[in-house]
Length: 489
Image 1 (cartoon, helix red, strand yellow):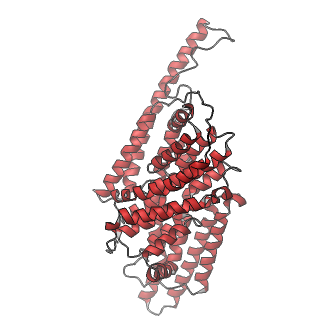
Image 2 (cartoon, rainbow, N blue to C red; image 1 turned 90 degrees about the horizontal axis):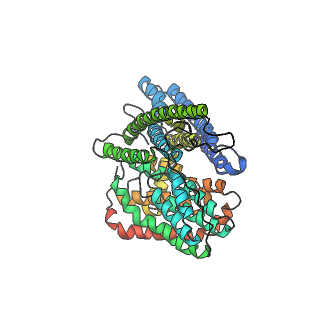
Image 3 (cartoon, rainbow, N blue to C red; image 1 turned 60 degrees about the vertical axis):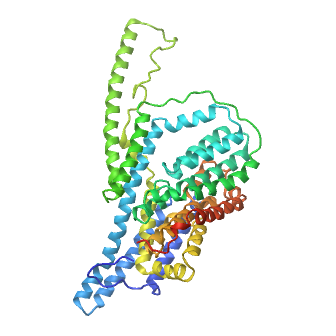
C-alpha cells in the first residue's frame, strides 16, 4: 500500500461492511465484463461505475473516521488519505494512458498508409500451402507483437487467415488459436508487447533488456501447441490473390519514426531516468510534424491534378465513355483524404483505454481497503512466490491479465528478478489457455464469429497447457541465475 508522509496509517477495512460492499461491486462489475459478448455492452461501462462507487465508499469512510478522531492533526491526516491514494492511482494511469495512446496512433497511421495491407497482400498472393500459412501467420504474430501490441497483431494475422481459409474451417480454427498463443507469447518478452510487461517496465522492476531473457520460454510456449495443432491443418493450397496492395506515400517513414520513438523511449527511461511516456509523446510530436508535410504535399498534388483535369477537359482529350488517363495518380493525397494524425488519435481504442482506467482505479481502491495486502500475505507468504506466480498465470485465463498484474504490482511482494520475470511470463501467456483470457482471443472471436468460438479453443487447451508448463520449465532452466533471492523494489 502507498505510504503517505505525515499522514495517519491507512485503515484496515477488509472486515467492514463497506469493504465487503466494495469487493462485491467489483466482482459484479467484472462479471459483466466477462459477459461482454453476450450482453453486448462496452467493457469500460461497468468498471467505470464500479470505480466511482468504490472510491465514494472509501472517501465516505475516511471522512467519518476524521470526524470521529479526537486529535485535530489525526483528523486532518485521515481526511486526506483517500485523496492521496486516488491521486497515486491516477498518476499511474496517466502514464499508461498517454503511452498507449501514442502507440495506438502510430499503429493506426501505419494501417492507414497500407503497411499491414501490403504485408497481408504479399502473403496471400504467393500461393503458399495451408500448412505453410499456418506457420507463417503464427511466426509473424510472434515477431510483430513485441513491437505492436498483441491485439493489433492478432487482428492483422486473423484477417490473413480469414482471407485464405474460405472452405477450410479446420485450418481457420487452429490457425486463429495459434495466432492468439503466438501474439500473447511474443508480447511477453518485450515491454511494448503487452500491457502487463509495460506496467512492470514502468515500475522499474525489470530493465528493458531484462525482458529478453523470456525470449526462449515465450518461443517454447508457442511452438509446443503449434507443433501439435499443425497436424490438424491438413493439406491444400488456397487460391492465390493477384490484386496488388499499394503502400501510400510516407509509409516507410512512419515505420521508421515508430522505431526511432521506441529507441528514444528506452533511452529516456534508461539513461535520463525519466518516465517512458516522455519519449513516446516526443515521438508523437515528430509524427505530427511529418504528418503536416504529408498534408502539404497532398494539397500541392491535388492542385496539380485539378489543373491537369481542367486542361484535359478543355482540350476534349477523351469522351464520356473512354478511360480517363488521369485517374491513377500515385501521390500523397491526390486521390484520397490527406493524412491527418488527429483522425488516427480519434480512432484509438477508447473503450479499452477507459477500461484500463476503471480496472486500475477499482484494484487501487481494493488495495486502499486492505484486500491486496491480505492477498499478498496469503499468496506470497503462505504458498511462496513460485506457486503464487504460476497460479496467477492460470487465473489470468479467467480474469484479464491486466487487473491481475496491477494487483501484483500494488502488492509489491519481495521478489527477485527471476520471479518478476516469471509472473510477467505467466500473466502474459496464461491468458492463452482460454479464448476469453486475453484481448487477442476476445477480438478474434468477434472477427471470426461462429467459427472461432470458446468451445473450439477449449478443445486445444490441453496442448496450450503443455506449452504453458514447458515455458515455465525453460525459464527456470535458462534463467536460473536470476533467481537470487534478493528482492527488487
